[in-house]
Image 1 (tube, rainbow, N blue to C red):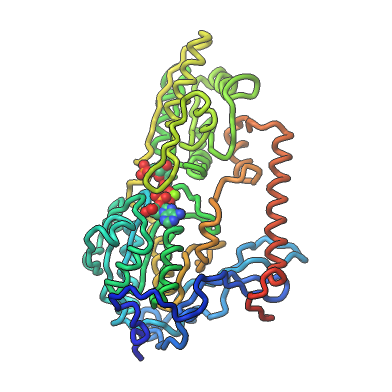
Image 2: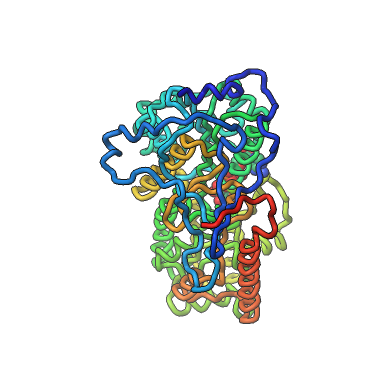
Length: 510
Ligand SMILES: Nc1ncnc2c1ncn2[C@@H]1O[C@H](COP(=O)(O)OP(=O)(O)O)[C@@H](O)[C@H]1O
Ligand SMILES: O=P(O)(O)OC[C@H]1O[C@](O)(COP(=O)(O)O)[C@@H](O)[C@@H]1O
Ligand SMILES: [Mg+2]
C-alpha cells in the first residue's frame, strides 16, 4: 500500500493552502477516563487527513527486534505525569507512551525526512542527529534524509546536506552540531513552502523553548495546508528549562564539565590567604546547572541562582556570609548562575535592554559584576585582604561532546521521535516523563519554563549542604510555599474538571 498516494499536497509546488479538514487549528486532544484520568494526547496525521493507508511495521521482520518480546508499544499505553499520589486524589495527566507501533503511516521508500538544529549549543546534538539518521535507515529502511544547514533560516536561505549512516558515523564524538545552528530567522510560511517544495514529509526539529515554539507554528501551518508531513520536536536545552520532561540531554555532561571549573576555583582559593573563587555558570532563567554542579562538588560555599533573590549588604546578606566563611575556613567558593541577581545589576549598571536575534534578553555579566562588588566591599572598609579569582567557563560546558549517559539518552530520544513520526503522530515533542519516554503535545512544552522551585526539597538539600543563608525571611518562605501550593492546587482542579469545561472533548470511560 503506498502511503504517499495520499500525499499529493506534500509533493506539489503550488503551496496549496487548502485544508482537507474544516478544523483549521488544532485543539488540545484530551481524553478523560475514570478516577480523574486525563490523557493529553498528541495530534495524528489522520486528524486532518482521513483514510490514510497504513502498512505493517518493517521492524517486525528485523531480526534485532523480533527477539524482543512485546517490542511494539500497546496503542493504549500512557505515562503518568504524577506518580506520587494519594488514595483519593485524581489520577491526573498522562501522555502517550513513545515507541514503535504495529502499523506505520509511511512506506520506507516514500519517506523524505529532514533534520534541523536551532538555538544555542548543547552536548549531544550530534548524537541525536546520528541516531535519527541511523534509526530511520536501519529500523525503517529510509534512505532520504536531509540536513538543514544553520537552523530555521537554513530552510530557505542555505544549502542542505544529504545525511547517510556513513556521513554521521562518528559525529557523536564531536561537540556542537554538524548542521550548524542559529538564532532568529524564523519565517513560518517560507519554511513550510520549502518543506513543500522539497517534498519533505518528516521534519525533525532539535532545539530549546524558542525552537519548540517555532516547531509548533510550523506544525499548525502544515496542518492548515493539509500536508501529510509529520513534525517531531526533540527538546534541547543546556539550562534544563523545558517543562514536563525529567531533564534535558546534555545537562549531565554540562554539570560534569562544570566540576572542572569549580575544582580549579577551589584549588586557587585554598592556596591563597582569604582566597575567593567565583565561578559563573550558564542558566538564563533557571539555575539547574549551578544547583546540580554545587550539589555534586561539595566544595561550593554559596550558590546563587535566578530563582532565589539575594542581597549584598547588611545582616543576612552575601558580604556578611563571605566574611564569616573566610574567618572560619580561610577560603570560599561562590557559584553564580548567569541569570542570578539581574535585578541588583540593573540597579547599579544602566540596563541596556538588548535582545538576541531570537528575542531573548541579553543579560549583563553577573560574574564580573559580583567579583568587583566583593573586591570593592573588602577593600573599601579595609576589612580584609582578599584574593579573588573569577572563572567563567560559560561556553566550555556546552561545546563538548556528550558523556556516555547522555549519549544513551540521545539515542532513545532520536529513536522515539522516529517511531512516532513513522506511526503518523505529529506536532509532538519526545521526552522522558518519570523515566518513560513519551509523546508530549507542543503546547505543554512551550507554555512555561522549568525552574528551580526554592521551596522544594532539592533546594533545601543545597542549602543544607552549603549552609549558606537562604536570603529569605521565614515570612517570605511561608508565602512562597503558599503560592506554590495554591498554583498546584489550581492546576489539579482545572485538570479534574476538564470534561465539564470543554464540550468538544472526546470522552470515554476506561
Ligand atoms: N515564539 C517563537 N515563534 C517562532 N519561532 C521562534 C519563537 N521563539 C524562537 N523562535 C525561533 O527558534 C529558534 C531558536 O530559538 P532560541 O530562543 O534562539 O533558542 P532555543 O530554541 O534554544 O531556546 C530561532 O530560530 C528563533 O527564531
Ligand atoms: O551566546 P549564546 O549562543 O546566545 O548563548 C548563551 C545562552 O544560551 C544558553 O546556554 C541557553 O540557550 P538556549 O535557550 O538556546 O538553550 C543560555 O544559558 C545562555 O544565556
Ligand atoms: Mg531558550
